[in-house]
Length: 313
Image (cartoon, rainbow, N blue to C red):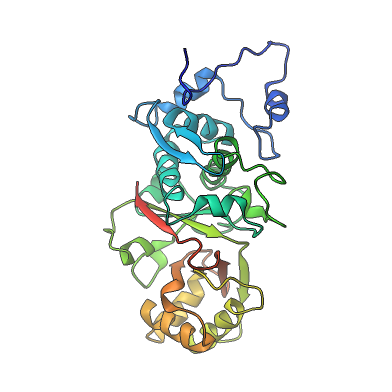
């Protein structure tokens, strides 16, 4: 007899379209999923040595039991490769901590959703995009790893839009949002190194992210000028007063660094310029294409409602 945490095998008539079966059962994010056949799930599980029945976490708001096997099933559905599975398992552990407050993230009327930031050697091993179009389409790892988290939130956590997911608007990043830091182009310590990890540690950060906002500053050629523009965007009416992720573009980072600013200076300057923003709530990383004087502001969810969590993979 199957235990409550074990997956249920369904017998599907060979004449049925498996993708349509997934739609009919509400197992999708609105886009077609890869049918999780036993063979595909077994292949996905080859990406980890962990026992398929091991409980990783319970996922709110319905508190579904996310075993290694159930996470693998959703990874299959998202289109992941087996080598992505350890990162996804770690991300599930991160987003189900009390600090992240996934229950609140899942049921709020706000439009936040789990966003992943990847650091360390695993970025290259899994080919996670940190450059051109990193928030956009075109990269399997980015698209499917982030999507696996969304399917887990829905299929295991039970956060269906209009039911327990009460987001008034949502945003495209709730389908999938997974990026990496362009560590080689950063003039400063990498995001995870700032947090006390080693350079060669692979980490994943889970952040409750609203929709990314573009900062266009092609006119200023000083650190102060660029940071003033960023500060004005951060304090735009309606933005969260909680943690905010700044994805500083390569050209902006070069200018800011050459003017002698380190990350502490950046945080202090923006906190002073905004008059109300806490320096410790600014998360800083460098990414994006090599050309273009852009930075991305990713508002979080009001502090202390949710705080980012970083774990070693």
